[in-house]
Image (cartoon, rainbow, N blue to C red):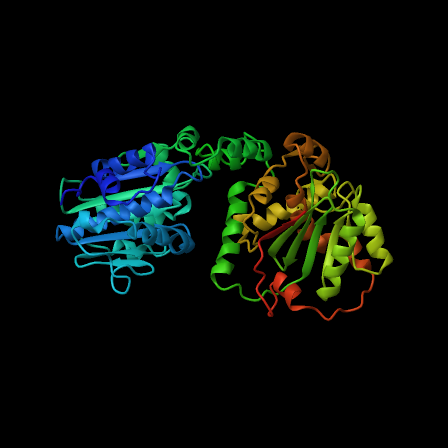
Length: 500
């Protein structure tokens, strides 16, 4: 077969490119390395086109091996099943429909028997999706020609890597039997097997690593330089978010950051897992954290929470306090048992006062207030309520304590939760001090509204005023409100809403 070890030529000649379409220079580079180096690990920014490149690699491998009558298999895996079901295999379907079948000398794939939802089944082999939590399925794969594709590889479990690397234990030769592996991911914290490979740790010398840079992706027209600059200003150039997602480098949250980015990303994965499961009904306390906008460029954010799941972040710009009050009051009336937690400092104080006038069960959150709260282990206190509230969020996200908190996939939320720093003051007990909001606003250039709304929503149970709630008449509820909070009537489908 002409393209057996030439995926770049296959991509160039077999795909029906339109207009200015085509593989980027770095995509050509990666595909060219695969048959030569056998094990290739690629890291780079979001938006580099890694899923499309992976899809073309799968189609190249499947069509060339099948045409040659070679027993072959492709096993695709990822850190979460949705990367395979929602991204990789739809891309495989997309590019399969763009194949020039006359160049390959065969008829198009049958979508009834060959090109299936999560599989390609041809005469001599198959490409399949396998959950990364089932390394035994990967380890049991046998064929004369194997390709392993690992997407979002940064958090794929070590057992899955071990199962894949076992296929290379007999050494790499030219021609069947043969094995190839392509691992692709945006980087995360400096830990795990993907990081070990890219840092060239002993035992991983067989892997060839490729770092796709932001400059390469911008030059290819895949990322706008203006967008990259905007995110640098919003998230901070030294933040883990910007370093991971735009520079394509491994970087944990700063040592003095309150909440590590990887912990927040894990909470987002739990949110997605619930979505993948059909958004089952939620139980638990109904809370809405309300951060009221202080300036024209900031947003009023309502973080809707049921138990330990935030179902939606609702944002509104350029609203006065009466509009915000009316919005919160309407939410209370439509969701029996809902308790709002409102920042009482500054303009939020007017919202708290008005809600109390109408008998709403509002909890006033005063970040500067003193608190007797302690850390989970009881060793440290806090200099104020804001510090205690952020630390509670950290403790609820800590992977050492089997966290169940779910957060919606919102990049600004992730950036704002991971932005504040912390320090320890002297005294007995020593006290944790979170970066004051005023300092954080100066550093970020805007209010960390989404993060504050979530933090306030999680602090509801610990507010001292929760024992003196004003009575409120039970509402009748509504299907739309029930859906927002993931009740049995609906599943909290919204991620975020923004109105102007």
